Length: 202
Image (cartoon, rainbow, N blue to C red; front, side):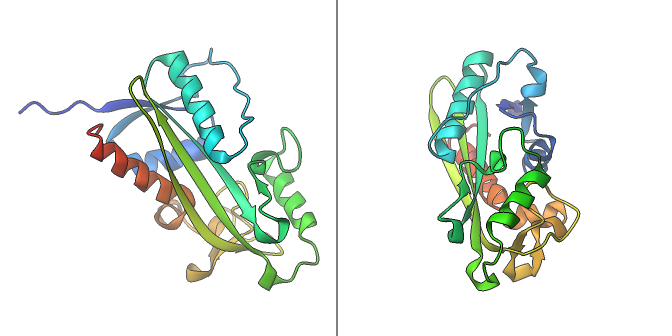
């Protein structure tokens, strides 16, 4: 029997941390290309009203540009004491072109004086897939809380502040394998791979 060839999918990102997490989950089951492989790809305005809409905006844009199956994800941190903020604005909470550190410091400032028992939050990731025949999405989320100071050296984004109670660690204190097992993106990726298999793309 002829072995099925590895599928090629374009991930709509330049973010090396995100690419590393995707590759860790996908292994050699998919040939993953990224926006680094398409330097002429124009900037896309992520102006959707939700992380799900933003994921679709990016996936549709890269599919239209390359003609290849495309996948895009968007992630938001939802803090209950801030009425769900920063949410869809998570990557630019401290302003356009904000760094990870800028966003972390802005979140700490916004939550100053809020007691630990009222600092519940969750990470939510939406992954959208688009090719010339279909479009669908999956989601993953994880509950935690926001600490009053950063802990850990690993991860990225809000990871140094996001505390996961069952393991008594922030996401920055976990190694990649441990984080992928329980994280919002890890869960969304598991659902993504499961759906690809069901649809015979793997």
